[in-house]
Image 1 (cartoon, rainbow, N blue to C red):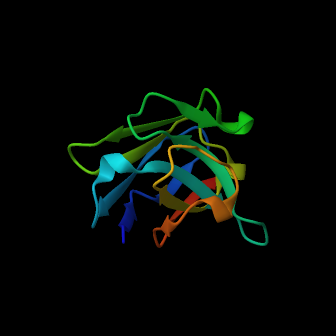
Image 2 (tube, rainbow, N blue to C red):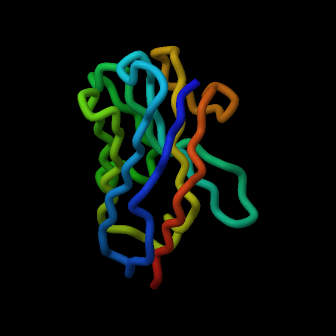
Amino acid sequence: QVQLVESGGGLVQAGGSLRLSCAASGRTFSNYAMAWFRQAPGKEREFVVGITRSGGSTYYIDSVKGRFTISRDNAKNSVYLQMNSLKPEDTAVYYCAADSTNYVLRSRGSWSYWGQGTQVTVSS
């Protein structure tokens, strides 16, 4: 089992920045690929960005490229999401996910472990 706890969400004005953190416990963190998903009200949960076990490869959806950056610190068992130039359409609950495969897949069902989510609200 892997336990994931997100933090760092909040309310920010459009154009602002937030940094989300996800702390993992329970298993060897470096054995897991990590991802961030988000779910806006009335919408499906969608893949935002993923990172491989070593951090050597990252994958972003087009709408966040150049604005969001994922990183991980395997020594601290944590993954981060730096979000800059935030837009109202980024408003959602953001979830951290983990899986022991080293493939970063965009489907929700490909990820075995999930955090409880953290709310990000971007006002216009």
